[in-house]
Image (tube, rainbow, N blue to C red; front, side):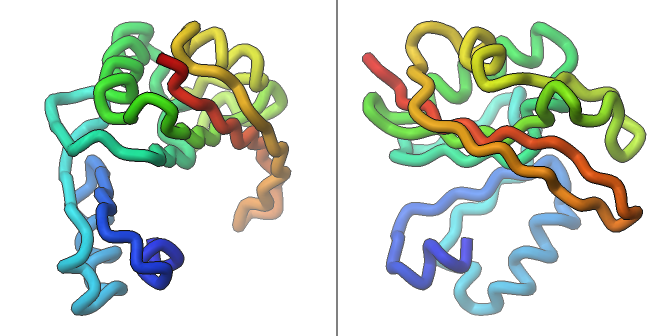
Length: 150
């Protein structure tokens, strides 16, 4: 977010289910927090933003283990991303953990994530990351960039 603000991006929205997480981010930004639209909500719930050029999800989608939650996520993504826009979604890869922070996870190879999102989203690029945890373990992540094609 700081990177975007430093480059004079003017339409930034941050969504988190945790009021405490939003408050920490706002405090860290200080006066610059006024340049961001803050949304406390579940990503699968009811909320709106103007259509965006870039949707960035780092490590939310893999917590959506209920198929109905993934349907609602896709609906929000489809409604929130402008045609031609990019969605960058990071999920645990096939060798990632089955649980994280006490929650079950789903794991995806890039092609599996593309199939989960559906035909309106075209997979453009992927990056694999082996993320070191504070406990010294490694978690496999895939960052995938999709474009909304219609």
